[in-house]
Image (cartoon, rainbow over all chains, first blue to last red; front, side, top):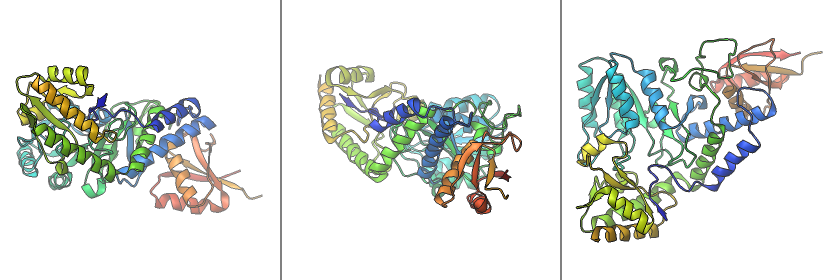
Length: 387
Length: 75
């Protein structure tokens, strides 16, 4: 079996992830912040250690500005619903995942103005298009937020977040970056890149378990400007029925996903041991092999086809005369190739690429994919395309 | 007899564990303890530090921009 669905989730997880989760559940399993006994303290230390790992990974000085969530989707919802009010204007890139677009469309129905920046036909987000969208949105009111997908989950295109941050800040807006495809793959420095809010998931490039992720707040963001998504017990200020204002408790009601967070910590350690440069270099090579190989198969069209230095290793393609579901099924059944087909929860990106509504097949290799795996997958695509 | 320990109070246990790590790096032994109820109901945990290093510990935490709620001598 060859797993080429890292853009959906990484597999297999590093052994240390399971060990850390097992340790949490069998040894450390107190409730962080709820009690003061030794198991609760041990659990709290584990959660805090991972909070610090995340802060370090993204260049944030204060780890308490890392808010753990169930994943990138919840983190994005926290940022969007927490910040935007009726009358605010928001600019989004033209390749956003539905994790962004669905809450954005819901907010639009409640009076938030939305302008979508036009993507290029190969799925890239260009600063000029975002600047034009900001100018258009400014005509309707204050632009509160610019939202950018750090890398497309359909074609892999990397957005120039530093330039987008400058544009957002010039307009008096904050920049929210969806790093679902880039955390653990690309170096991210929130300060250097000018990112105000960073949503990440734990189960893709960071190799942790599902149910983990977070929203990281830049120093310049006033957390009191963000309404919590949920309210409830935090273990702190228990004499009050009002939600606390301090971080991270303001946004972390309910018992945290301790075993998941412990597993995320092990995933981050695994990435650190490999090194981000090594991870990126490996994926760039595999990406290049895929582009070259798919481009040479009769009947195969690569959509986007952005060079590996400007994209993460996510390649979308179609086979002439065949539905993506049929090709995907044959790749799995006959060749043991696991990939994702369809619209990848990103209809906007597919519209930009001209692959809406039929969708594409998506190959997304990862750190544990080998050159031989790619060669095998290419032979399988050729066989299915010919058959 | 002068107190042996001081206790540093925080709003959240995340700050307790953050501070424990920062103080360990500074060579100051700090131990999470249940917050004395007579001092606060903010957070169930507080940090106990040697009294003679309490001022240094609080200064270290404030330099690191940790929000210290208060600190007290432990009787």
